[in-house]
Length: 212
Image (cartoon, rainbow, N blue to C red):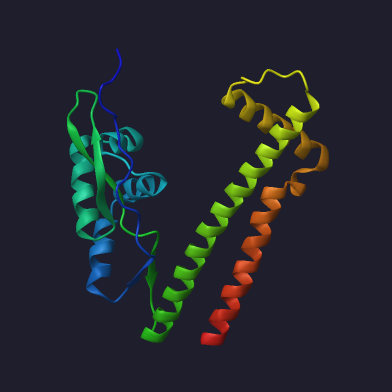
């Protein structure tokens, strides 16, 4: 029987910038209290993998729904997670989708100048890696299209109505074959990402050195 409602909608909000928590602050007390339980830490880790409803968290963590709601309340009070959308049970009951409040949480001990420097480093690093990952996916997509077009040019009698999914699968096999022939470290998309990551680390390290 087909489901009339989606089990989970896409999150309506995205995590905010990395959060620094001073170990000597009241916020740190709330964070430590919320994460004192191993189950709570597991729930937070699961939500960093993907936004989920309480039912999905229960299935992933392996605990009772009541226990999940208890830890979700504590994590939300500590500012570690936030409601991010609406999902539905198989019976059509509306449920809240939870997601991390921030892209990352870092416990920090140091003076205000060091805290400001670390926040700047984290914000720039996360932003640059996200942009690099998007560029890498774009390059991988372009390469896949190039393989498809190259294969089509070499096969003059190919059916013009070939299904797109089959073409993408063929492109993936062609890419894998080429990578196997030339060696895994010569994959263009992987080389682009690793090279870009190295340049980002160098640039941010230089910026931090200049700020210190």
